[in-house]
Image 1 (spheres, rainbow, N blue to C red):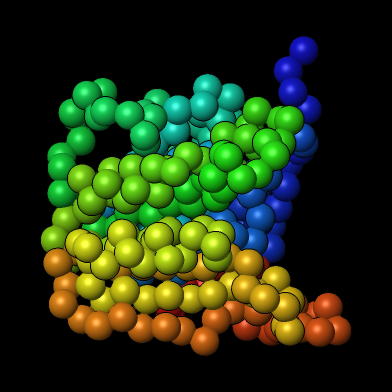
Image 2 (image 1 turned 180 degrees about the vertical axis):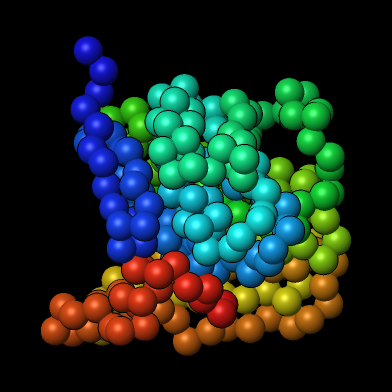
Length: 249
């Protein structure tokens, strides 16, 4: 008997997404990451760690006539992501392949290097030695990284990003120093946006983007707050979550 799945609404019901009831489940982070990608009609995009496909499906829903490639090596996630792509009628727009981001890329030779306009990812957040691992396999894969995880994911992003292309990661705020150090080696026009789950609380996550071969200076944005002190969602965030509108990071 297979794992229990739920059918969830994203973008105010514009997307229907199957997810496993137990384990890693996409949420606001995925919609926010998609909204921060400055893709335009005709662009070629790559998502590392495709998961159930929420990020790329949100992006495809917002920007017409783009092409998206996804890398995912978890067999269960591959099955459910392909089901979601078909369910939302994006078979001609999105293709996902069984490729491990952290391993050699022999099985992706069919993809042209340095050809993508946008590369984006939600890499595993936590260093394995510092956190107790969640029991569920899918959640463990999504959340637990190694000391080299972010470096490996950025290296793979740089392998496929073209000159002038953007790379965007969303990650845990504790990894910002490492993210900034690694991004600044190869990227310019770096933009940092802290994410607050609630007004008055410390930032828990961060969006960071950069442009390959750019010489523009770093910009530190004010940040995004998902809920006010009265637990209400600000109007601009509600619109972002419901409509997937582009967020100007």
